[in-house]
Length: 325
Length: 247
Picture (cartoon, rainbow over the protein chains, first blue to last red):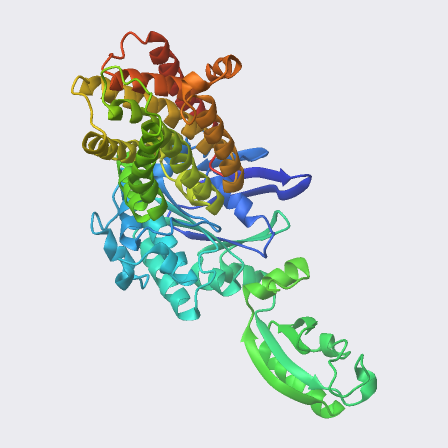
């Protein structure tokens, strides 16, 4: 049985369809990510699953239960980290953990030694600190701890690493993988491509209330048809090539002829830094052709490198827009 | 039930860490007792009818303390919790609305009770108390008065989305009750029209019950007070739990 199944979920706010008829299933024991930009409908979706919002239409089953009708029973079995939330200013970290552990009948693998939970989250020395004296990132990690303290079967994490520095972010990812390996299902939302790619077993790409693609990160990238990106900048050779008419200005379009090179799927210009990206199914052949072309036409290739395509490219291919803005 | 006990424990800690509420209960209310004592002293013609001065004084700061704690100290934090998203976090746990309300109620009741004991002690030493009072009647009057006003506090703490709205409604209600119930202004001085209005103010019944208990007259004969206050307690609490908003 699926841990979560969603069918034709819709939710509107004042005539705007925040969630527009989405369907998906989450398998037990996987880390499932809802990836999309801000305003895509991710938080509305996750809060409908948690039973905190009432959907306009569709059918939701979470652990086989209806999140509205059976919410008290369900809340006993799930853990939740909300995107916008707080605790009392004058509650200590240890007290908050004991309180939340006390709200549930079930016990986590750490039993009554819930303070162990703070170690992997880097909060072990904060046990006696007041909530208001924690930094934004520490509060965020405490909320993750509170979502896990009772050892839930299923955890919902809404933008879990917002406000975390890269090191803390990696520590949280490693910890969540450990939690997953113990059998907990994890459902998360993120607008952070690297998080989805690195952490999630399966990802649903969401934009404007709809799910555009669903699969493992590797599958989604493979579906692009071009698994490598060849990236470079091209110094303009004459002012006519640039929109501002100056040699240091950015080019306005990729030069003609690149699309015709071998194994090229797509060519595009990254507008913010003027880099040209060629998606290729066979990078060595495309690269050789590119260099021949550059020599023949006297191009000055700068910062030339080859990358694996990412979920960022998947999002771009699906929506025509970049994920990070 | 577990959740309720843990939440009560945390709310107790939080109450003690907020100096405003502690100051009001344990410093301001005794000051109020002395203030009313001073006002009475300036009226040498007052006939005490065999009672000590403390017997007559005590119900007033007690009623004010019960009302103020039930209305401000109870609903204020709930409004702030709601505004900051703390209640929303609780909504995602097995906690139910009545547990959130009752945890606050227990803390406020316990603290008001301590403040009442302090007031009784001060009144005994400073103004004298007659020995005739029945402690059970006093406790009963205090408790029923508290639960009735607490249930109003539950309603105030359940209904409003922001702290600003809550405080505006609280203040209107609190000062309305204090002045229209014969608490701030002695009942005997109210004109007939105001006495009619006072019939609709819950605090009137609380004060009446407290006065009778403190004068050693027993509370069982006051069936109207008992009925009104019990009704408010049950109706207010049930309504508050049903209408409770998490965000």
